[in-house]
Amino acid sequence: MSGPVAGLRVVEIADELGQYAGKLLADMGADVVKIEPPEGSEARRVGPFVNDEPGPNRSLNFWYHNTNKRSAVLDLEGSESDRETARALLARADVFLEALPPGRAAALGLGYDTLAAANPRLIHCALTPFGQDGPWAHYRVTDLVALAAGGPMNMNGYDPEDAPGAPPIHGKGDQAYNTGAHFAAMGILTALLGRDAGGEGQYIDCSMHEALSSATEVGLPHWLYTKTNIIRQTGRHAATVRTEPWIHRARDGKDVLVFNIGRSNESWGKLKRWMQSHGFGANFDEERFDDPMNRMAARGTPEAKEIFAEVSSFVGTLDAEEVYRGSQACGLPWGTVRSPDEAVDDPHLHDRGHFVATTGEGLDGEALMPGAPYVLTASPWELRRPAPKLGEHTEEVLAELRGLTPE
Image (tube, one colour):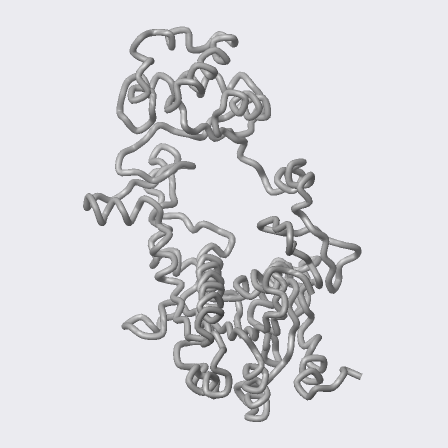
């Protein structure tokens, strides 16, 4: 096995909440055994599915979130023998990652005090919606509810002219679940460093709610420091005042996001000359545009309004790719708004080998999915195996526990 945490033994009991933390560890080389009930993880019932046919081994969402793991079926709810097997696995493990309801692990005989007595070096990370205690500890959530209660959803929405009266918008892509999982993975890695220094494991109470409340960007700081609420805006940062639009339509019908106009005199000079070569921004040579504070968005200046209006007209005369390449040549962080198929076809991602091929039940050939989120030179990310079929490694894991070969 390769990877920066190769040799690390992890036992995972997690569905949509928590499974990404296990994936991050598995993709970094850990041996992650995913314990599932006989009917399989709830995450196996999340679509889309291969050929739109549901099945425990056909969820594309599950495939991505469970690469490099092994699946072992244990009936923890109905079998004391299986619970004892889980305890035996955890007695040999480095990390126990679970996303069970508060108190449920202890009720199954898998509480930290019980496990640590047999394995003092164990790191037990319990990821829950609201933490192990407090008035909301046993509240139920989904990714949508978590984003709402944690605060990030208040940041996402539209300008009144784009969608009058629009409510906050749900950011897709399991953002809440995966934010909690990221914090869980960071907590586990930090605890491993602590164990290396002190020799003991520890318990990690990881709350998705608190993780999300730490990731509200400008919303929470504005309220804490100025007692002002932010305004939702289309395709740009929420702010305390309405700012100039950043999304503009190019000639070919594609959208371009423009950002950071006017802050740098160097990039402003290049942008001005580029636009003027196409017949736009003739008045930008006037002295009033020389001050960066006059040019920047959200300052309420007439110069900023003029600049963004002229930029919008300028973008409308070029194809999106021309705008993207030209703005980057000016040193400006502009980009096209890409559809999923355009992202998959991105030559930059392909040149870096970002996408990897996987296989699975019902698939004729291979399918692409995102690969390494980081590139390590000494211990590279590796797709060692696709997501496991339900119970695929049960006998293998039990044989290892008994000190036997699978045969």
